[in-house]
Image 1 (cartoon, rainbow, N blue to C red):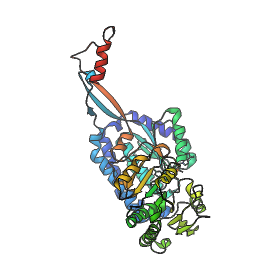
Image 2 (image 1 turned 120 degrees about the horizontal axis):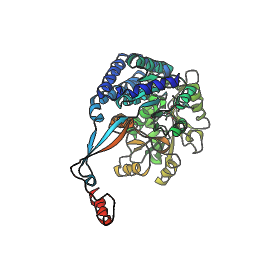
Image 3 (image 1 turned 180 degrees about the vertical axis):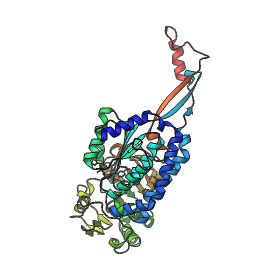
Image 4 (image 1 turned 90 degrees about the horizontal axis):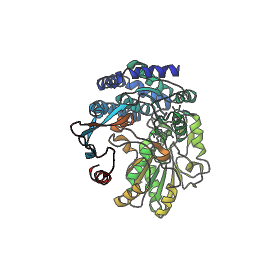
Length: 457
Ligand code: NAD
């Protein structure tokens, strides 16, 4: 069934219907109407899947997608238009253009943590750029995946966009096919599987992966505000956010006041008993619950530490001074556990940060702008913020993506359109002049050619 589906999309793509910008815009408008109509179903599905709080479902899923589709509809004409660029005098007389052309038949594989947003954002971009799309949403959020599937069925012909549901077996079967582009969001390990599957066909990929995101708080930081913004960014979605701060590196002089401030912030956000708060999500499944609770054993939980296997609840937790070889400092945590390590001089910062692969995000809290800028420039990472967490994700004028082990490529706003488009460089040459310099016989022309390359390119 999968090979036939791809065959039908390939055939449909070759009809050139998706190349019309008017067609793409209409498709996006139809999709938007359905997304608005089904908003409550989406919010309910997210709650059923892992108790995603209503506010978070709206702010981090449905509204983000609405903003993305509105921005795409508004700008698609200008993004899709061939862009004239300054011509090289070497080619005189000519006019030069960049054409954006769709890749063709694309595959989008998405994760469970923002299951609606991370399936829909690449879908919107792929359609805007004129591709056909097969989406494989996560099997761990079956309610949300079912809604995405029913929305897509209502809006698109299957040869244009189709949702294929399933787990690893289906995903593997999809990856075994020949695609023109693969956009994957998920873990580093599966990212490597995707890259391997793409290699035999030289299929281009975007890999939106994860990593261990450092969060540095220096001695000049505004402790209270830092605590507030870190509590928000870390415990949103119960810490199951790819760009959540993974661990804190804090100057030893302010560690205790930071703990006091975090305690207050957690109580103010989720009450004395976060388990009863309707604003706090659950861990997605028992496998992840077990993985996370293992990180708590033999550690000092300075805040939180309570768990409930039945409801897959883990309290907002801070671990004081874990060893670097402890479970919690091995890989990306991806849950509501925040290890805190203190430092006295900057050399320790560097040793710890560079022990890990390049992370997806990096945060620094400091009122010393020079120092903050230095840190941002010193380390390589996907993106980040000074004096806040997560928010760089929300500006669609900033490309979002990793580097090194945290990913390949980026998207959001116009970057999304570019990601799903091949950029074709075209020179339109005039016929009224034909300079003889480049043509053989070359004798006596080298000096002139060298000067021309130096001065005219
Ligand atoms: P995952 O890699 O386990 O799964 C992602 C997708 O890949 C799912 O659709 C799943 O069905 C499929 N998949 C799983 N195993 C596979 C295999 N062996 N072969 C082929 N396909 C397979 O990731 P997840 O648990 O859903 O999501 C969590 C991870 O995603 C974290 O590492 C997080 O940092 C990362 N993430 C990154 C971003 C980003 O934008 N960079 C966003 C969200 C999540």
